[in-house]
Length: 465
Image (cartoon, rainbow, N blue to C red; front, side, top):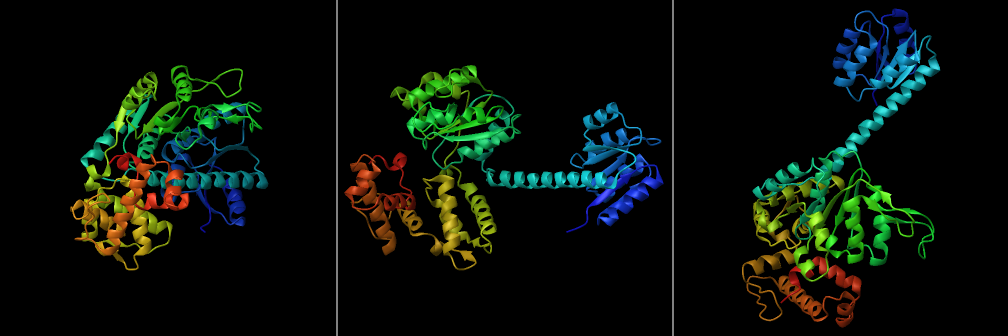
């Protein structure tokens, strides 16, 4: 690890000399400047980790140098030094962005303590920046198709506003990625982004999750809990799968959108919050309204800016870029040698229907990378269900139990096709009740869930004959 480099800017040679001795004894490198102009030049040339800056100097004084450093090197910690320190001077230095303020004569221990704190803050800032870059990389939208470009343009227009956004699209199209992009590019970016999966929270708990509760308000409420709306105060709350929210909870969400007031369960008063709401659903909310399952007034509140995400099969031009991105990410995270997909494999992937969209593609890529022993992935390395889907696309294997043909499909593909069709038939017969279906076919529910994931069976696309 390289030694910390400290820039000393002071017009007194004795001060520079004594500071240099203190730093070198602590294995720190020192760079010296006798005036402000020289200090700014060395800051640009030598990239110091911290600056010790005298306030009173001939020519450009320390406060002027500080202002220049904050503009050109905003993350560089600057410690101000003064032989005639006053409260007003210290306040002004702090206002301009100084990390700390020390008075002459300088004490060795004080100098070292302040510098260590400054260097630690700089290290933490760099670490946070790296985490943020990694985070943005993980949640970026990949692809260059016209359909995705239109999504990017709409995000760029709506993000700087405070308008509510309703994101629609099939499961796996990346609705959360878009919600995060809206937040990241909004004036609320420095505030929390809070995600709530409305479909994953039991009905009896969703109000408590969203709005919080007070101790003793219901059985099991052993302490006060802050709700998601309060956690998101000043930032963005992402209500995923909002179409699964009960009418009772919808009424409270509507009040939060209209007045900014939320009422914790069991509380005697409301809490005012400032949140931006981004909601998402894979359902048709107008149809849900007609069926009496969704409030029309809440729909209009959420649907200020509608944003529809295209299915992956509608943007096949993005598949190559997505495969490359998922491959690099997975191999990097798992210490795998990077593998390449052959032209034939990519052609095959572009022809698949991808009913699970980008999420299904990512899972498929990861599976292939794990199971393929060589350095290149070819068509033969694709999982059986992909071969089955390709056969269906070519008309060799109709979707259904009757009339399953074997032409153009391997034995394993035929078996997979038959098993998938059998499961879909049984699920339809049991009105898509997982427990009842598992009992009817005499298999554990956990096994049935695995089959549903393996064959990309989904009620939305397979629910009707």
